[in-house]
Length: 268
Length: 296
Image (cartoon, rainbow over all chains, first blue to last red; front, side):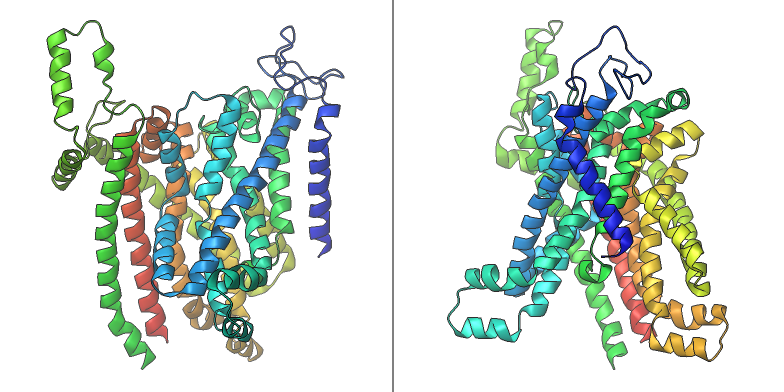
């Protein structure tokens, strides 16, 4: 690990710690309204001020960080598991199954991801409770974001298909399911980790885009995307620069994830 | 021998892609029809709840709906209409989807092409001189700049564009640029590290000659393939950018359709975009293969 990667990892750990301790640090719940002080400037009571509805910005930022940083890895885990299962099976079994999986993958990769997400989101009801909207947003990303990883996993699995240890296992009477689970998957573990780490910043950014467009996490729930919706009035940012904090935090986290990622040789 | 084999396989590959595109169109049409048919709220006409409509008019509406009720007849009706270029009617805008697509596609196409032009130019210009001169400061600062842009959500770039009164295509270029820069840079690093390129440098060839004669022929096929992928990225970026910049394009149309749960519109827009994207990717892939074959 290079010094830059170590620094990025430390920053990420600090932000995760802040997220966990958020409930102790925050002055009020994220949805609590201080109606007498809307759009307030930073003060000791409200270190990052309040929003237009009088909600404490620091509370919302910490809660939003928790939502984004817990659910993006959860969605990444789901998509990596789907990619691992499909990619390993396709690469190991080969033949028609591999061709079908790769054709579906190519097709999905050719389609802009946001169009697909919007189509699926349009199928689901929009007037759902905020917590359900959070689950829908991240479940959708997890279930639809596996395509790029499948291709990489499939190529790697194909590479070890004819290896000696698999030949030995096969000649010992190992069944295909056991071969995939006990022999192919453990050898691709580093690749799965890499794909998992790659997916996290992608999902964080996608959630931000969807929430800004009003199709992701719904109010009054906080997420980084929701907090960035306040940027529509950029002219107000000059007078209230502390409102840039959610964007700065998002950029720092995404850059740190990019830096912590394993070397390109592993990910390609 | 290998070159001949690759070149003779090209028409076959093109034919296969064309067949796949046709199957994709038919499969996509079936899927679209299914999604619209089985979505909650299908068949319920808002007008039926309007007290101003007479009982006779409501009955006529229901009769019209009955014509499409059976599943088989629904599919037949949908596919025959599609064969005649009829993509249905938008629920929210009350206008034919075909007409909406004809209006919006050129606007998005123009923005995407211009944005890609800017992004490719900037990415190529920033990636190549740094590697040719091997200046660490230039390389580090350009990588940091592209990483920063890569960390910004497209919607935030769109909001910045609105504030700075920048055109839509510029915002698309800003979103696509870091992705291209990163890939082009790693591709050029790999090409510059090839033994024959190192030998050419050791013999004192000028950097321009090395780039044109030795690096570009290796890097060109993947770059051509990247051209197809960049179209997909740019179309994806067009949704938040057009929606927030209030640009009347396909991205804004898809966003409005999703917000209004206008399934006939969003499903058909997605189908058309996927067909266009697949055709663009196939074309880029075939050109890249043809070029790789001719270089070998």
